[in-house]
Length: 219
Image (cartoon, rainbow, N blue to C red; front, top):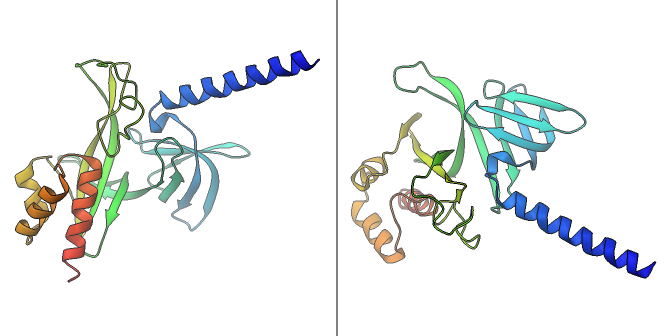
C-alpha cells in the first residue's frame, strides 16, 4: 500500500510539472487568469478570464461561461501568474486608418497627468525560427521586459500607443518619433536612457521612459 501511495504521489508530481510546462508554452491570451471585469453599467464580475484582442472580447468562466465585448466593458484586470504582475485593459475609442472610432481593448502600461503608454499584443510569425529558445527565451527572461517570446515559430509582439490630450497615437518604434511623442525634455530623456541602458522599442524600457517623462512634468 505504501508503494502504491508513493507511485500515486510521483504521478501527481509529474502531472503538475507537465501542466506547468504546458502553461509556460502558451501565450498569455491562451491562458485563463483570475480577475475581474468592470462593465459600462457599473457591474463587476469575477472569475477566470481569457481575453482575445483580435476580436476585442473577454470571456468569464465562473458558474457559467459568459462573453463580453469592448462595447460593454469599461475595463478588465487580472493577475498574470506566468509573467507576474497585475495587468489592466481599458476599452477606448480608436479609429484604424480611415475607419470611424470604435471601442477596442488597450493594455495600460503606465499613466500620468500628461500621457499614458498603451499597448496591444499579438502573435507574430517569426521567420528566424526558435533559435534554441522556448517561449520565454529559455524561460528565464520575461518577454514583457526583455527578448520577445517565441513558440513553434511564433513570437509575442506588441504595438505601442501614446494617449495624450484625449487622443491615441500609434508609436512607430523609431527613436526620433519617441521624442515627438514625449516633447519638451529631450536632453533629460536621452541622459536617462543612456544611464539606464534603455531601448526605445522594448516594452519594459518604454514603460520606464514614459513614467520618467511624467515625473519630469510634475516638477
